Every structure is written in C-alpha cells, then in structure tokens.
Length: 156
Length: 257
View (cartoon, helix red, strand yellow):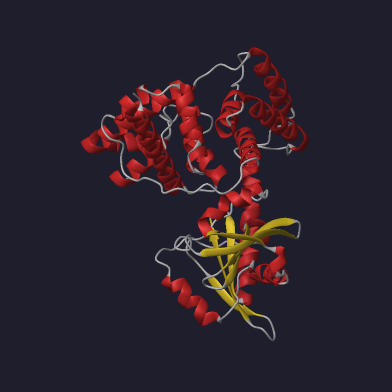
C-alpha cells in the first residue's frame, strides 16, 4: 500500500480548507474522484490527471460559495519575526484564516502549503503565468501573516 | 537569472523542499546565497511556510482514507498503454509532421496575407454578436475578477491581456462554438465584447503581445483584434468605432500580454 503517493489525502485537506465542513469536503472529493473515473481521457499525464482532480474539487467548492471574493492584496516582504505569528497559530485558527483569503491566492497558497502539486501545475490550474503566480502566493502569504498577527494581538 | 527573477521563483517555493532539484530553483538559490537581503527574506519565508504546513498536517480517518484510496486507485488504474513524447520514434515522427505542417502553413499563409485563426475568430465573433443583453448575466466587476466566475460556469482559463485587467464589466456568459467553450464578457469601456477560448483548436498561434486587427461585416463594420495569452486566444470586438479606434485603445495599454 506504500507504493503510491496518496495524493487524495491533500485533495481532501484542500477541499476541507475551501469548504470548512468535513462532510461536504468528503462528498466533494468522492464525487470528484468518481467523475474522474468516468471521464478520464485514455492517455493523460499522471500529474495532469491529479491536477484536474484538484481543479474539479476547487470548482465544486467555488460553486457552493456565493459571490466573487475580492480584497486588496498586500505587497512586500514578511517581517523578520514572521515565524512568531506562525508558531502561535493552531490548525483551527490557520484554517479559518486560509478560508477567508480571496481567490486565487487562497488556492495557490493552500496548495503550496499542502505540498499537493508542483507550483507549475498550480499556476496552470489557475491560468496564471509563473510571475503572476509568485505574486499571488506572496499576497496570500502576507495576508495570512497579517490575519495571524492581528489575532495574536487581539488575544487576551 | 537576476535577483528579481530569483525572488519571484523563491516566492513560489514549496516548503517541503520538493522543488530543490528544479533547475530554476537551483539557480535562484545560488543567487540568494550571494544576495544577503534575498537570502534573509527567503529563510524567513521558509520558516513561516514550514510552520504553517506542519500545522495543517492531519491524518485522515482510516475509513475515509480507505474509501478515497479505492476510487483513486481505480482512477489511476484506468491507464492504457503509456504513451510518451520522449520516445525517440515518436519524437522523430512528431518533428517530421510538425515540419510538414509548418511548411504548408508558411506557403498558404504567405499567399493569404493573414494568419490561420483569423477567419475562425471572425465567425466566432459573428455568432457571439447575435446574443442579446438578456443572454448575459449582469455582473459589475473588473475584468480580471471574472476568472473565478467563469470557473463556476465550468469555463477554465479566462484571461485578459496585461493592461486590460481593470476594464469595467457589465455582464458575462459562455457559449459553445464548434463544440468548444467560449467565455464572453461585455465591457463598458471601451464598449466591447471580449471573447476567450482555447487558441490551439482554432489554429491561433500568436507571439506574446502580438495583435492582429481586422474589420468584418458588410453594413455594420466592426473592428476585431486577436491576441494570445498563454494557451488562450483573446478577441476584442468594439461595439463602437473602427480599426483606428481599436488600435488607439491597444496602444493606450501600459503593458503588452
């Protein structure tokens, strides 16, 4: 059983980050995989096949969410003590911060952290050039840091 | 690679270190090693990302993992004979075929004084022009924000050329042309329709930043411009004005795609 990379695990974690609901995430992943089995092209690069599963899960998640999330994207570099904010974040807090990020930064940064796909495939999935992808990831990273910092400061 | 490109590459670095053998990452890390500020920013980013990645690591319940694995294996196992373009025989046949196609295209296009996809782009736009306002879903946003809206409509890859991202959108829709999905955005300024679709099936192959402009229609002449952004073709059709107005608008854009 250890002979394969269980990419479906990050697929579920990704679905859960986008939906914040275990049952909805489980359903989205199973439906995606089943649909993939039915419509899988006969000759397809395995990495592309996996990327398509992530794309499909994302599509299902976005369909269940209303509106087009939009927010100003921060620019620049992380402050030197950024690590402290990351240390103070538990999974619940981090998931809620990631969930609240605007797209496509949310997807880009989440997939990078989940180590689910190569960045080139994530960029392809989002229709972004590599340079744009790097900017989107950095914007999301800074937004996460800002959110974690404000939560840490607000905590008693 | 310069320091700016290296910073860009490292911003998209996976904290797992899986990218360490990638040629671009190797080059970027070398630049960072010689640039203290970049090195410091990268180390800081890496520490931040690694902690967050660890925080997100959770084991799936065994039963759930098993149910996923069963379907994932079925999906993977459906492979037929593995076909690879790296196979030397396939490579030779492919190259010969491409040369033949290239030669024929060069001969024919030279005679036509045009490019292969223009007629397709015109016909697609003529079909799209027939849509009334009621067929568009009203959306007030900027053009760049439509990408996810189209994803929800099962259209992937909506892109706009650089400099056109902030154009105000009035509505959007999708339709099929020759069984291929097409995304359409109605733009307020310049008053126009923007069409996005896969370039390859329509024989559109343009260099980055290259635009082809024509006028079509007998009575109501319309100016149409085509360019390519990545794998997608982008067509703009002005609702008011001619070729000169379109050229003026394109010249006014600060960046090229």
